[in-house]
Length: 283
Image (cartoon, rainbow, N blue to C red; front, side):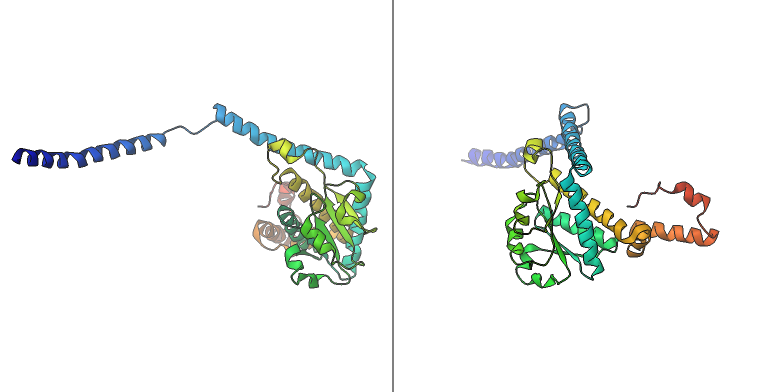
């Protein structure tokens, strides 16, 4: 009996040691995983990831190239841009504003376009389609215009807003369609203006998933095109001064202050300032 008790006590003392040894071995194995070298361009996995990344950039570049050709050669796209500039300029001159409406990723594109237009002194505001149906329709005033951003051209939330937009309010749309008759957002609005933003290949074909990528890149570019063209039409040679006045903060504001200080000291543009013009990239 005493022998059995002694053996049990010995086992009880050995078992924690075995557990500790097992835990140490697990920690060593876990630690050894951290020593695995990171993937590099020479590894098959690294090469595959880089190839995928370059494919995304190449696809976006191709899409932008194609939409550039469209606005260079297609009369619908060209007329749409000129009509949009004239329409929004007329709205601004009358004391109105451009409302930009979109949902999801297109909504984020719209918010970016609104922010950029404001920085150039263009009267603009974002209208969220859901909030519009819950009271924000009151933001639409008699001299305003509204521009929808929708790749499909038939987003349900935007169609619901359109039903409540007064008939006299000009309607514009940035969509993937290249003809107004194909865009549901423009049907029943004979004076509506289309700004085509098509892509050369569906995103699911390009990347295996239909996440907005190429389409949002092109939509942003078309929005930027409209914004800068409109600014030139409204401000002519003073666009740069308007932008500086509206952007006193950040790296852009600091750069403008340094240039202004240099001009005050030198009585004009210094040779040094001229030398570095175009080299500074605002953050």
